[in-house]
Amino acid sequence: MLDYKDEWLLDMGGMMEKNLEQYYDPTSLYARLRLAQMKRAWKKENRRKLTLWERTYLPTLVSGVWLTSKHFFYNLMFHILHLFGLAKDVKAAVTYQYPEKPRPLSPRLRTRHRLTKRADGSPRCVACMMCETVCPARCIEITAAEHPDPNIEKYPAEFIIDLGKCVYCGFCVEVCPEDAIRMDTQRLDIAEYSREEMIYNKKRLMED
Image 1 (spheres, rainbow, N blue to C red):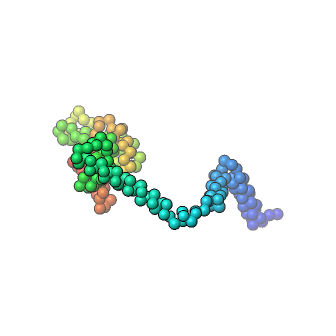
Image 2: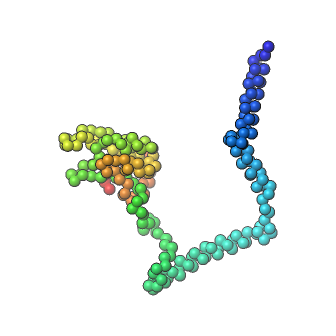
Image 3: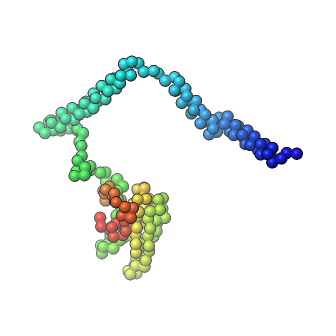
């Protein structure tokens, strides 16, 4: 009769046998890991040894300096020609002096959110909760209230976006039936000193 220790050993043996079967199964994760280990070991053993000239690192150093100098003098030459009105059709690299001179952004770029307004200055949002529902980061929180205008069912008493959680996917803009939220402010400088300041309420979202 087997005692509990023998039963435990039999169970462990069965588990090890099962793991070994997975290890040698070509389609299992164990086999893929083993194959990756074998490739790394082969590369380490068969790596080409550097020559004496390559071990000085002079070829790489000269190549890097030559590549940097080529781009520098190419751009310098064409910028000088542009000053005299020559070779205007040839573009040269430009360094933007950010933040004094920000780089121009594509109009399609998804930047900081804003709430659009009606003619009377009220938000176009009708608090349908679609943006809050579709948001994958769960960073939108809307508090709905009854609108005084009987033609409008609801309005957002509060509309909060936590930009510290937002992933800028644009789902909220695409799903909105009233075009009430947009990401076209061209504002990327949203850094703050605390997490609380990254939370934008309805007033801040309607300022832009």
